[in-house]
Length: 219
Image (cartoon, rainbow, N blue to C red; front, side, top):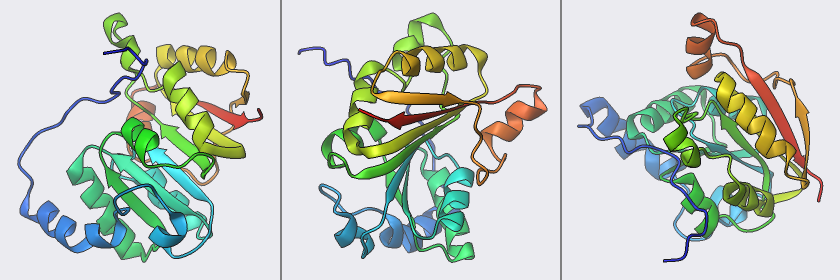
């Protein structure tokens, strides 16, 4: 098989789902999961609005905050960890958020097969697994093949937001983004809407600082 440069950027997680998680999935997933096939925003969301993709949303703190502060946008949150997605959907229900959507699975495969070219206003990548060991570097999401995918799916002027609290990954992100001439990269601008919950809060308690990147598609 030809090596395309595609890598899976997550580790599989297994475990029995709790009764609470199963109840949340049964009730909420049908109302928030994007439909099968190539994504048609009007058909899926019932309106023509900017679409934002968050890769690796975890428990959804950033996704929930973005959806709440940007009701004019539709946000698709992607993760492989089912209990975290169920928890996010429960909070979305509590807040009455109708613009937060989800997909369980591999974000790279989703971008390849189901997200049309030039259809995303933004892509968010907050605190991804840094894969710090040298033998795992190839599994980092920020790699040439994945950046090609992101660039092809963004609308002109769309942007990629990246945040990391791992110094080695920050250097990696700076190098990879800086070498891609399709993007204009600004470092240090924290989105005012993003909370410090979740992975960032753990990093701050451990004394780690956050590095922010905004890469805007310019060509």
